[in-house]
Amino acid sequence: MLKSPTFFVGAERQRANLTTLVRREQQLAEAYHKNKPLCFSSRGYQKTHPVKAKKGHRDADARLEAPLILGVADGVSQIEEFGIDASILPNELLKHCEEIGMAQLLPSGSPVVTDGYRGPIPLVREAFEATESLGSTTLVLAILDNSTRIHGKLHPMIAVISVGDCELLILRRLHGRSSPLVPVFHTEMQRIDGHVQTPLQLARVDDRIDPDFTEEITIDVIERGSAVHCVSCYEGDIVIMGSDGVFDNLFNDEVADLANAVFPPGRQIPTHEALLGHLSKRIIEASHAKTERLPNGQMPDAPIGRGGKTDDTSCVVAEVIEWTEAHSKVWRPRQRRWQWPGFMACGAQCAVDEEELDDYEGSMRPHGYKNPRVGRDAKFNSNDDDEEDDSNCCIA
Figure 1 (cartoon, one colour):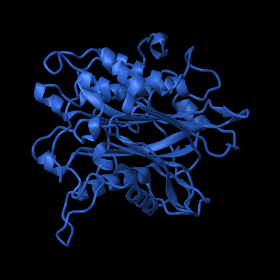
Figure 2 (cartoon, helix red, strand yellow):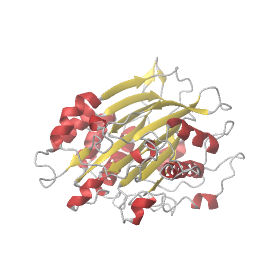
Figure 3 (cartoon, one colour):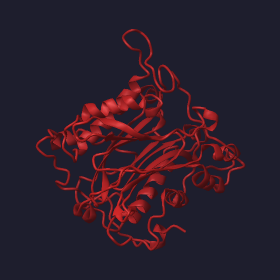
Figure 4 (cartoon, helix red, strand yellow):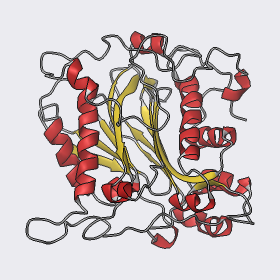
């Protein structure tokens, strides 16, 4: 069982490995016929490993859950040794990713900004340049792009960009609703020399940590070292993303088995958000269980080795659903995270009620997150009414 922290990787060492870690791939499935925009319905969960919690370890993971963009960022823990809160940069970065992404991706027929969405690399670059905090983090984003057309027909795509060792897995029912969910796509970890403690990372540090650091190296990491994949998506697809604490401990087929246990074949969609949250919590619990001995005294097998590793764990589970007029009203320009009264009401096949939904509030929310269900006047950012410069949403 591994207990070592993630190490900060210096500028020159990162630059030297960009050409071996970069990925640019596109995966197109059969043509899309229904000609309607799609979005994510999502819930997440995160928890510090009990062993780390007893030592007073601070959770540096962050999550982003929005209809058109999802994210997980994992702050590099070694930064704490220099008196820097490792959780601040990941949360600040995802906040800017959400603001920029939702403004550019709204399928309203006319873009909110002049240039609009240009792809995941410019989005992450602009989001990082908008941050101010010191720190270092890994990142994975899933961006639902409804602008893609093939043979003149709408063909929604998920653009995935990752830097470091957070991962993403897409599950799909390949033979109709009565068939099980199976993995159809997953990302790979980017680690310097394959070492578990040295992932590729986005950083802003001072001379105390790395005298050779300049922000140009982080821009190079985004533009020349990130792994980018564009994948066809369909209504009912399940997107699961998590920090290395999840995917170092769980095999993809184990994650798929958990998903099929919570979402058995034959269920109607959309799935209630509480069930999405329930699956994310079960995935975290299964990840932590890999560090405990089995009844026979042996340690469980894990992708990183027997006994897995003790680590902070964060997970986002999303279902691809139809974008509706209700989404447009909630996410119209300059508004964030309004209340969704009755929007995700479940059908007769869903036994989850509002009391069960309340069970997943609180600890399942990321650092600094405000409950969007406390009232229509509660916004994610209390300063959203302030005048903003529209150029902040444009990519140069």
